[in-house]
Length: 566
Image: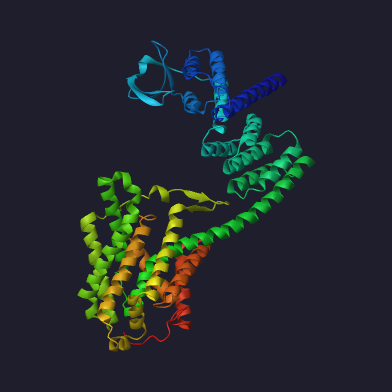
């Protein structure tokens, strides 16, 4: 039994030594050009090809292990997919001339890929090739060699991914290689991931209690749900009657876990605020047009959600047009869709106001029913043209990706851009309202329609253009929503109730009230959801708004001097 343990320990030390040597070679390999004397490319390629033939040789595992060692010592990270193929059983050698390929078998045929050129070279019968066999010893050497090459990959994101994987599957052989990689690492994100992986590995495999306690102190600085789960599991594995050294380690882990829990709670609060701001920006875009039309004309427009839907479908059409005729400019389709969506929704809004709504002023119930009927007509028209299924609008490259802050808080780029876009639209509307002649007329009609008419303002055209402006902004809201939701005929119905709540809560016709109401309701919703759920949370918000309106019937920011009549 003792001899077996000693042999296993020597095997681990040997694997770790090879791994460290391979890792140092890998860092040398990715050094800048001119830092070392490079062998001729043709000779290097020939040597690697010979080593690959040895790796794919018959049952001689000693030769295969030596070939794997030599391949790892080249330090070439391009060998990663080849060694991974050997591990997965996808490395083959042709029986006739021992040509080594990566193969994918299907129906008795192999799809062949050149392992060095990384390009497909055709198909061949599987019977013409011999699979490279792997035993447990060779599998261990392959895994350690892969770890070394991946930790020294030129791409920092690949190095970070390798460190994250090692954090989840720690191995005693990786302690020294992780230390070497951490010494050479200069990318901040990858360096943090390596330090976390090293601490998790030392916590489990370090030989001294001092080293394990130091690893706990390192892990305490990471407000990470994975670190919390790791420490929780380790604390639970230490029995109550464990030796004093284990009890000290348990106490250190308990203290670190408490610090992490507090930090995670703070990050969760920040995450809820950021998610609330994101939701609030969507509500602002959907509600700001409604606030304008409702404030100027007193119209309860039940078809406002369909203006949002038309904007989303316009975005889909523009993107399909770019994909068909200008595929190279697909990333700019979204920018073209913004004015297009505004124009389409604004024209539909003006036509709706001139054709139907202007005959119903002063009759709120009939206006509500008419606009509800228009919403049904628009939904059915879209179903007839595009079908009832959801349409997918892809995000451009500059809106793809995310920022991982800490504590599990992730900010996606598309959400960030939507917040920026909503604030830009809001600022533009403020400028139009305060600095333009049309804005002056709109404010005059809002505050006192009869006096505005007596001053020569054509209130009918102000109504039409205002309705078109509000509808156009709803169309731009559809452009934003197409990036975070599926485009469907019912898209606008999901936001119409929330939009009315924002307008009533903030103050009818007041843009600043709409801004405060949108972000306030968005943040409140996100804080309520973890405790009450999405549906019940909205019910609580609705009840609170009803009670608030009983206290302040005209909302948070009521317009002063506004006439009672429409």
